[in-house]
Length: 466
Image 1 (cartoon, rainbow, N blue to C red):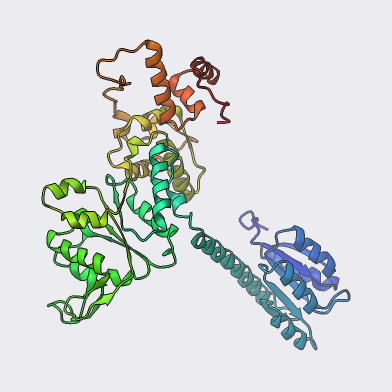
Image 2 (image 1 turned 30 degrees about the vertical axis):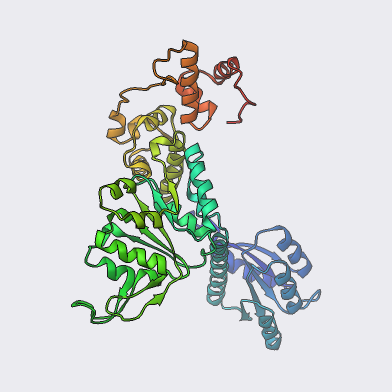
């Protein structure tokens, strides 16, 4: 066996009371780089299945302790996820058919052709892997918290967002999500959908800024054939496509003013009329909208209808900028590093204290999206097992904080050095999400010294394990 073939394709359990037949099957499968366990006793096989991970079972049908059909039934009872291949000799075809009826994957006729054996085992193994992936996918669909779990961070600002998402999700209220570009507004919208009763329905996103003003009505409401010059075929609008689900109107602040009353009508009446049609169609859609603009300002400037603003913003969720999320920056960095490193087939590097300080000091005008791009750069350019400052993009290396202010509580307040140090200490702890080891490293002291500093002000809780 070559070094390239040394990794087993899977674990096959061979069951046959005839030693020569068992040895031949084992030799054939081992040549194909399978790990093989062979036994002559059905009882022993059941014991192995109860304690070991097996990918495929290959069994004879005629054995003294138990019939092959009975064995297949027992295996299906204890390990329904493991595909079974049966081997049938002359005169046992009826028994093989009976085995198929109890749920075996396939059967082979003795003497077994090695090529057919290889193909059958490979197909059975692929079937098991596919079934496992489908179970995982179903579990994610059935788990309402799956999308919420993608909103990564433990800052107080993000905890507020998650709490709002959970509270509003199960209602039918329209939701307005506001936040700077790149903060993850669509992620929040998907979490609202996934946690709602509509999660089995479609989630249909549309970027209002990416559609020309002349086409947006057709995109949202649809059109009939011949409704206008280029309408060679009828089109179903996004509202109808999102029926029984959620329509996510991203960058709603860019919606043309002349379209806003038409959208308001649909939200109020729950009916749409495609362009060129003389009929209204009922829609059952929850609308979640998002914008990087401050819509109150847009209303006051006459660029957005006040009645539409109030109709969209029944519940408002403000997504914080990344620079307001403190230690979440490092947590997100580590998550992105793990993802990009896995795609590159290499271990994920850790973020050094100096690199973490740079990341925490940078203003992140592009928010989470900019941080993600930064970590992709690190994986592409860095080679060590630790991210150092030199691995970061040049703009982050070159950034210098203009100032760091520990503001007084009131205008003109003068505080003691101890109070000033206390505020600075707690500011650093907040930036690193309470991680005392990282805080001590950034402050240039050891953990014991940090504990003494906290203990001196009587604020040290039970020591963290971090």
